[in-house]
Length: 135
Image (cartoon, rainbow, N blue to C red; front, side):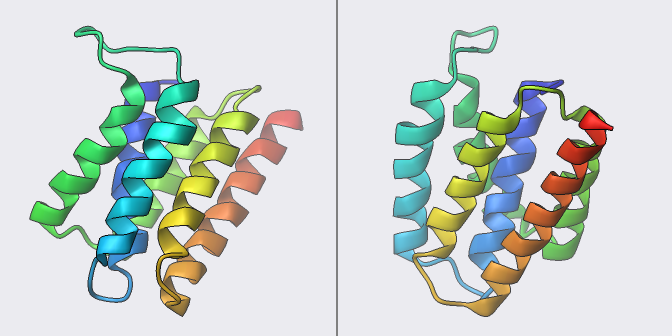
């Protein structure tokens, strides 16, 4: 992924959009977020920023920042999709799979249909972006 740090920031905002889709962030969603970031992303992300911090932690930071800023859900999804279309590279499949798993784990804490719709929308966009790499 081009600009991996920014990718994780945009992903953190997207996770927020999924969690807030029903109007409230459930404690279970936060727990699933932190657990998945640690187990599935930080543990598999070899890159660090200039201070030595694993870049996957930017997901948590942006999620918390988004809670304070109350980002617009639709705009957040659009910005994420735009970022993916401009920055996805060959061999990003595992990163994308882990990212989708994060979104699903957060949304599984709740049964809201809006959350599932956001994930479906993002999955379609990711599939299109990776197909364009092959073409």
